Image: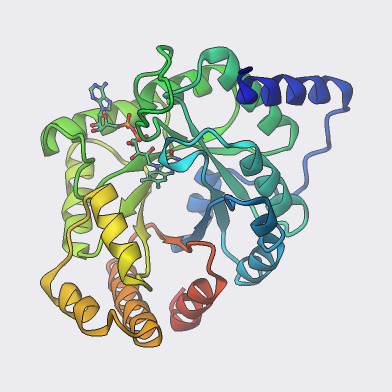
Length: 314
Ligand code: FAD
């Protein structure tokens, strides 16, 4: 079967050639500049809905998320190693053009070659998108890996050589699941920032002490870019089990107890999960972190409740 991604990329490239370059809206702002201007940068992460019919709801979601006035919204790309990525750019474009919020496009590299990355870059630049979260991507046994980019740092240095994007990278306060250890992991993270990552967005965690220790390690290693903690409010028990298996975040005993106590009531777990996330966020802000990156799970009620809980703080 003809590679569908290849087809989409070629079509996009043809479209780009046939269209005039758009004037960049005045709101274009690089992540590095946002961080220079503001201390508590607030951002949301969303993912493109899997089914086309769910795509219709994304407008309602975006409308509410954007009303909450985040500094940027990031849109995932092929999360879990999937290759269905055409909605990422379309949603990022909508965030920018309809809601005038700065989008950040996630871009993975493990299953792409340079020519494919060049096409994504061209499309993003054409749409006036200037912020990219450059990732290696999750390994997926069903998706063949290509050899041009083995690590996120390879993609970061390639993007810095070939484009004008502000590039962010991912980081892991409790180490990446494939990590060979904290020291090795920090060495690789330094390679990422040396390659040009200007901001780091963290994996979710439930114990702030891991994050504080991690930031200290970063500073000792000479990593001086903003490091933003990623927070995911837990609102259902199966979600937490999946996330913990996927990303290896540890569950503090007191949080485990809360989940266990309320897992059979949707409403009670929502209240408990939101309160836990809020207490994490307030503690992080009180410790002068560079910002908060909220994994919204496309649930505007989650984002709204968090923003309501910190409205006099940020
Ligand atoms: P890398 O930085 O390449 O690190 C991966 C592993 O390789 C680490 O253990 C690292 O220590 C090691 N390593 C790095 N460099 C070297 C080297 N030179 N030599 C040897 N080992 C090395 N996935 C998606 O598919 N789509 C998304 O949209 C997405 N968004 C994400 C957003 C955030 C904020 C985060 C934290 C993760 C996201 N992920 C996403 C998941 C991410 O793709 C996976 O965690 C992936 O397994 C690693 O990506 P990375 O960019 O951190 O890789």
